Image: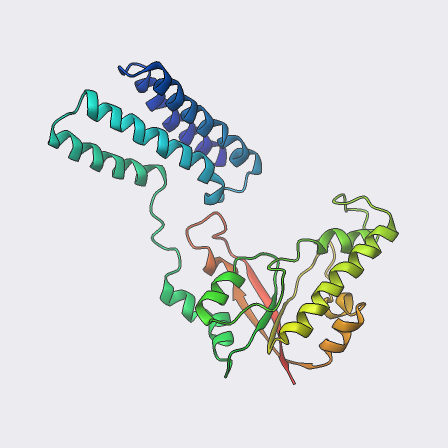
Length: 276
């Protein structure tokens, strides 16, 4: 499906350069516009190679394509379609083409829906200006929660991207091929990142913690022990003593990604802690 989309976009890119080749324009302008079309096609390579189908991976290709297309339409209007009806038809055609290229996502969360998500309401209920901490496996929840609650996330890390390679490397997991470093270097990196998290806890003193329950090793039922891992840092260990477990909450992450490549069933359970 992804390769089919990439082929479709490539086909859309190929149509207008072919047309532009036959328009009566200066050689320098023709070369520049064709270069933009070519660069747009080249930018589809990372989109296809990453194989994630995230819309923002298309932005470099789309930006170059839109500039080239605008110059093509301007040339057509100057040399072929000089009357007003053609200008209007061209504008309408451009709008229709834009929605064909990337259809409008009509089921993406609205402002009202964002405000009514369970996590948003939970953080918004904080009786005063406060921060919160959320441990998740991606960044998609944190940014809208910050925006719709007005409360900051109590960490410099919106995603703990460094955690899996450190965890697997230090546990000598045979299935891990992400990182190949001496144990001493892995321990030094663990000390570095746990110290950063400890600093953030002491700086922000979050009122609410939401700690996602994840199996880092998909072949093992063991849930990653967040406080145990980071308590190797004394500052974090001391800060963690200020929190008590309240309950668990479960959400479906797909609610944040309706109509996108991530719109698939993805329940996540969080342990909710509150500051004493």
